[in-house]
Amino acid sequence: MTISAMGVAAFSAPAYLTGDAAQSRIPVNPDVAPHYLSIVIHALPASLALFLGPLQFITPLRVKRPGLHRIVGRIYMISIVAATIAATFATIFTLDGVPVQVGFALLIAAWVYTLARGYRTIRRGEVQLHRIWMIRNYSLTFAAVVLRAFLGLGLALQEPYPWITFADIYTSSVWASIVICAVIPEYFIIQRMLTPLARRQQRRQTAATGRPDRAVA
Image (cartoon, rainbow, N blue to C red; front, side, top):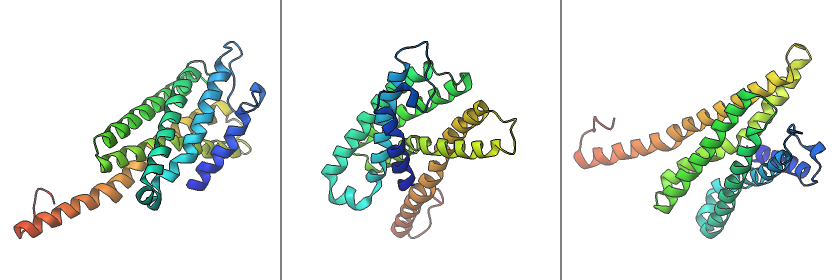
């Protein structure tokens, strides 16, 4: 996951460093002059966030270098804020149709909401909740990788099924990446974090009372 995230970030960003709209990997609206600029302002910080995100989940780095963890976290947060503002403008004027606009609008809203919750929880010292919300947030960031994977699969299907248009592939890929990146993290949050926490709580209550706590069980 880390390799694919950093690989996509390293692959995507250079195309937007040239200032050449012809190299844009997203169709540019020729009737809206700032559209390409909004794509650039979105793509560069979003690529940075995609690249930095995996570093925040490395336990030794987080435990031994908390100062570095906070610095990277602030850069990540600023990158997401800049990327979402630009993405809002880019989505409004996209040439990819209403279904794609709706999908990206929902993704942007969820991206901002999970980031805000992650920031608020760490400000309150709620480390476990902060971790849960940032897992959700980075999963939405990772949708950029999943989207490209689905695009590659869809394009591969065009050869045996030529009636499938690129618009169909792109729209389906956008929605599939959003749904997958919103749902899969919940499985890991429940199985890897909440379930063990509930079991530990049950064991503590059982040890204290000498009998299982039916409410917790």
